[in-house]
Length: 100
Length: 100
Picture 1 (cartoon, rainbow over the protein chains, first blue to last red):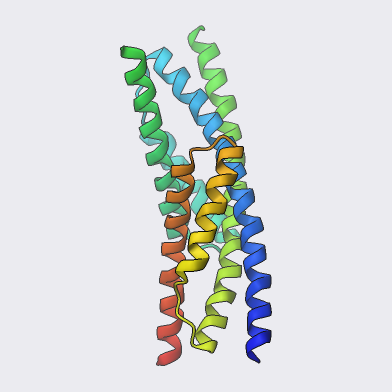
Picture 2: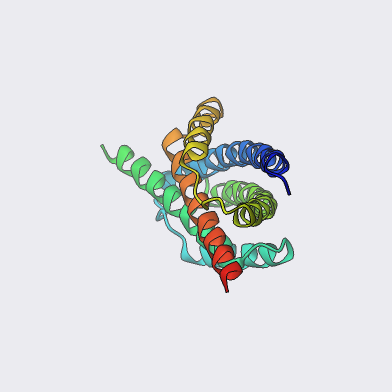
């Protein structure tokens, strides 16, 4: 491929990546709206922020979905852990806020 | 709220989270298809796996999108770094594969 053909192809792929990233950001915003409501419910009911049984089920489900979508299941699990860590940080901040 | 009302509301929110997670996994699978093609192009053209200028532009753009979507821009940046780290790991593995 010539340099300009490579650059054109790279730009085409980067435009798709940018579109996908915008969709990911908007879905993550929506997900955090849900988990913020979960956090408020849990804090009000005196439930602990983390729920290992629920998290185990989520990991198993996402690994299976990842396989079907031809995404590395290890990455799917790392991804969920990354998100859940952030969510628990929010829940704890919310709970500490209620205690004040 | 009664216990069963709390449980019902929690289930409703978790169902939404599960739907969003399925969408995220499928978008991530599609994103990795793009970055794998980028990796192959870069390896063929002898370009380095990381591209700090492109990454800087991506971070600035995603932080702005996050603000509009009411998502913590810090989290959006951490998220992109998490993904890019994985992508660069893939690119390097691909490049090392070509060298063999």
